Amino acid sequence: MGRLFGTDGVRGVANADLTAEMALGLSVAAAHVLAEAGTFEGHRPTAVVGRDPRASGEFLEAAVVAGLASAGVDVLRVGVLPTPAVAYLTGSLGADLGVMLSASHNAMPDNGIKFFARGGHKLADELEDRIESVYEEHRTGAPWDRPTGAGVGRVREYDEGFDRYVEHLLGVLPNRLDGLKVVLDEAHGAAARVSPEAFQRAGADVVTIGAEPDGLNINDGCGSTHLDKIKAAVAEHGADLGIAHDGDADRCLAVDHTGAEVDGDQILAVLALAMRERSALRADTVVATVMSNLGFKLAMEREGIRLVQTAVGDRYVLEEMKEHGFALGGEQSGHVIILDHATTGDGTLTGLMLAARVAGTGRSLRELASVMERLPQVLINVPDVDRSRVGTSSELASAVADAERELGATGRVLLRPSGTEPLVRVMVEAADIEQARSVAGRLADVVKSALG
Image (cartoon, rainbow, N blue to C red):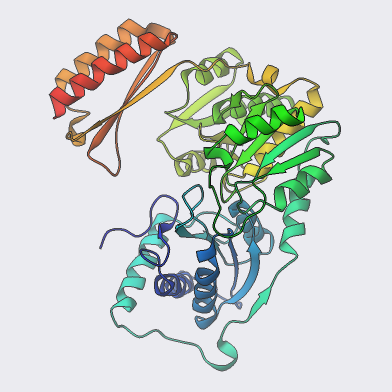
């Protein structure tokens, strides 16, 4: 059996790959593994369980709750809330475990299960491995040690979670949003109630789109993966900016008043300068991945902010931040982590902080985002090659060296083997788009000949 846990929990087509039986079994296994690790020692364990609005989340939530309660864990059901809200509530309520049912930006038929440890942090890899091992052992017939009588878990609705999370968001804002008109695209997802409530209570004039989830329409032509609708809505309503979330609202992208996209790199740049002004940017450092635009790196150098880069994936950004105590990090895709106020990417928090910077400075988002210039970036996927030889081919190394000499200080080359497919990603940045295309095309040809 391949590893069930990916970089962001267990995901698959609901009721095909991810079944009720699997959800129940993984939940029981998680309870047993955490008990063995001493997490529950000396007290009765509690878990926070939330979900996004997907139809499949209803039966998967029931299975998770049943599994946890059958293993002696009391359950607080918080209903439909963003992933970062479940993480926050897990920490703020002192729960031993958090469970979020969501497949983030994936299409509606998919769903996923993500576990949070005490404090609202992602489970350690070794605990995920142990949960998977115990789940598989019992799936094939080994009986569970089950509590009875008063030992079984109790289940109750925790409707207060909504207000508790919104109050947390408002409590960390540096200033109000009075005078701003903001369009919010909620992707018919988990933030459809939370995000408009938070922005309105912060003083913004709010226009919402994609805020009518019916269980089937999540991420359907809307949200952070489909920005055309929010661009049109910003223009139609004469808004100052737009904020677009994904299905579980752990990330956001933005558009300025002209409808121009503001990506995760630009958001990081704006927030980095704002946090430094408030002495909140520890060590004057921001963390991003190697896929960040070179324009972001150059802007941070110019502004005297140190950039630490990690492998691709918000989990690696978070690991670096936690290890060294950095306060801000994120990805071009809009996963932004403000570690003083969240243990994971939080799209609503990020959007609020971005809007607060606009309101607090009186400058447009377009002007603020111009602190960095996005250099043209070309990405070519080269399939059916031996990705394992990317780092050992002398022919490829020579071609990369030639390309880097040609591009100079205002260009960059990145070759990255896919983690899941037999292909190599060729990424080239340059000051000129035609040069980027030309260099990327030549490198792609060398990858084919050298690794094919």
